[in-house]
Length: 149
Image 1 (tube, rainbow, N blue to C red):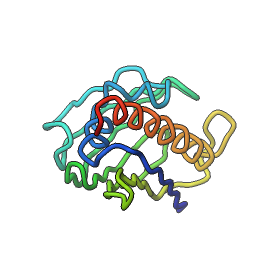
Image 2 (image 1 turned 45 degrees about the vertical axis):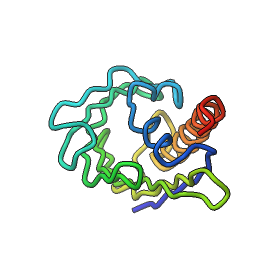
Image 3 (image 1 turned 135 degrees about the vertical axis):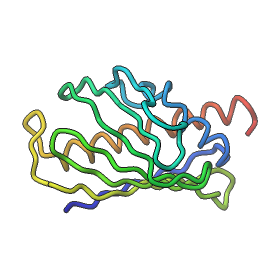
């Protein structure tokens, strides 16, 4: 098993950060790798709901994303399955002392050692996580500045 984590602090409120995060239609703004992203079971972001995420790069696949816990604007957890890799991940949204939100993600990769497009699953997921959350922060900061949030 391999554990990863990443943290960003945005100028956006917890509410705005959650609104941006939970809008899966915006995800290509954070990492331009997605094809179709659609909820196939349950209501979005409720425990037990299922989201199919088509990934186009570095290899084409569909990630089966099952929400295990969701407290909007506070924390969300899920389990992903794809390419023989199982990933359990959490994201927390915490009010930051100097106005803004600390967004912290962490997770465990089961079946570590799988190779994806010539790189280990650990390398792919770690690199993807950094790119996604840095771009997420940039979008949140821009929206916070524009709205005075």
